[in-house]
Image 1: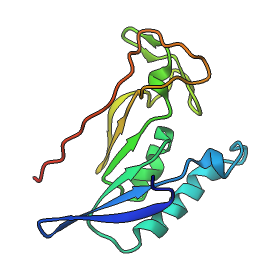
Image 2 (image 1 turned 45 degrees about the vertical axis):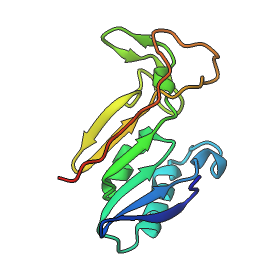
Image 3 (image 1 turned 60 degrees about the vertical axis):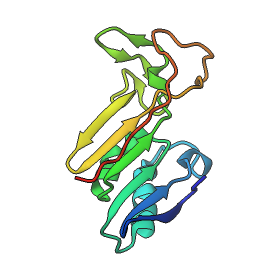
Image 4 (image 1 turned 90 degrees about the horizontal axis):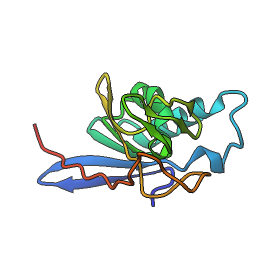
Length: 146
């Protein structure tokens, strides 16, 4: 587990920085004042420092995509939405934690600028121990130089 940590991964003279964020729910109860994006941004900037190589972020929260984009993260792996718990054909997820009804980031690949985010539906359940039209998944991503 990487909780507010960064580690360099080196192979064939190339470095990828792997970053991990602790879930803000463990440090900020609720987000009445909208402080979570600013807090996450500060943490990311401190972790990245002057690093200019490729960055991969492990973060629980897909709803913070704009923050990840603003920090220059290249690739994000996220979850938390449980695929929207119940999936409606042609619409997608019905409800997700911290996103409410019809979440924007419930499952799949999202791209904004130079940042790509993969959101896994995961293998567990949310508050409701039931999935509808929403099979659990484990995501496999292959990185290619190019």
